[in-house]
Length: 526
Image (cartoon, rainbow, N blue to C red):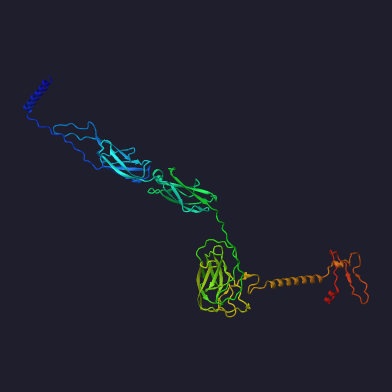
C-alpha cells in the first residue's frame, strides 16, 4: 500500500510541474538567503588595582564583548522574490567575572561597543601570589578574556615611635604600617588616641593606599601620670578591626634649677691707662631665658679722647656674668646681665688716648664663645679744659663703676686711657656744685633762734598796762567847786618823785582812764 502511495504522489507532482511550465514558462530559481556572520572581536579585560591583600575589591573593565548576544525569536522579516530577509535583533547575554575561581560577578556588555564594568573581591583566604581573573560569556564560552592579579601577604598593622619615653608635652613622631585594609575597606584614614582618648589638635591621618603606611606627630598630654605605661593607638576610621598600639612611658619633668653664682668682691687694682675700668652693678639672682644671638653696640662709635662718655649695650648673652675687654685687655670684674641677657655700661675715654681704632669685646664668663665685638674710633679733636677747681687724686686707681648716667669731665693730670663714669648713685653725698644740706639747715636754725630772742626782748620791755594804775588810783564824781586840786604829800628828801593829778568836773564823758608814766618815760619826754 505504501509504495503505491509514494508513486502516486510523485506522478501528481510531475503533472503539476509540467502544467506550471506550460502555463507560465520556466520559473526563475529562488535566490538563496544571505547570512551575515558577525566579525569576531578581540576580548580583553583590565584590572584596577592589579595588586592587593586578601579581601581587596578589584575593578574589572571589559572590551570586545559585543558578540555575547542572542537573536530575538520572530524578528526575521518576510521573504519575497525580490527582497532579502530583514536583519535579526539581539539581546545582550550575561558575562560572568570570577577571581581565582570564586563566585561570579554578573555583567552585560553594550551591544554597540562591547564594553562592560563590574568589580570582584579577592577571597579573604587567598594565598599570597598571582591569581587569575576571568570574564566569560554565558551563551558562548569562546567569548572570554583573562587577566592576572597579584595577592599580597595579609598585612599586620603596627606602630612605631621615634621615642618611647619622655616627660609631659614631649613631641613624638608616630609611624604606622600594615594598614592596607584601611585603604580598601575603611575611609583610608587612621585616628590616633592616647589611652583610648582623642588627642587635642590631632586629626585623622590619611593612609597611603599603595603601601598602607602613614606618619603623624603627637604631644604627650600635660595630665599624663609620670611613671605609668600609656598606650598610643591608631585605629582605621570606618573599619575599626584594623588597629595597632604601642606603649609609651611618661617620665618625671625635670625642675628648672639655676645654681647661684658667687659674686666676686670688687678689688681695686692698677689698670693700664689705655683701658677703661668698670665697677660691677649689684648682682641679682639671674633668671635665664632663651635670648637671641649675642650683640653689642656703642653709642657713639667714635669721638675724641676725653669727650662725652661712650655707652656700651649688649643683648643675647645667655649667662649671668659678662666680661668686657678693651683691645684684648680685661676691664676688671665681670658685669651682671639681666634675665634676658642684656646689660649697659658707660665708658669715658680719658684724655691722652692716641687716635685709632680700638676693639671693645663682651664675652660670657662661663663660655667665651658667646661673645660679640664692636669698634670704637678715637679721633683727633680738642680735649675739654680741666675743671676750675682741681680735685685731689686718690693714691690708687678709682673703683670701677658701671652706670648709664652722664659722667664728669676728664681728670686732672695726664692719662693714657678711658676712665669709668662717676655717678651720684654710688652712695650718700653731694653732687659737685650743689649747696650742702648742712649749710641750709644750720642757717634756718640760727634764724629761728634770733626770732625767738627778739620776741622775748619785746615781752620784757613792753609798756605797763593801764590796769596797774587802776589798782592804786580811783576817782569818783561828787559836787565840788569849779576847780579842785588833789595833792600828794611830798616824798622824803632823796626819795622818788611825786605825782600831781588835777581833776576838773565836766559832763560825764563816759568811762575815764588814768595812765601812769614811768621815770624812764619822763626822761624821754624831757
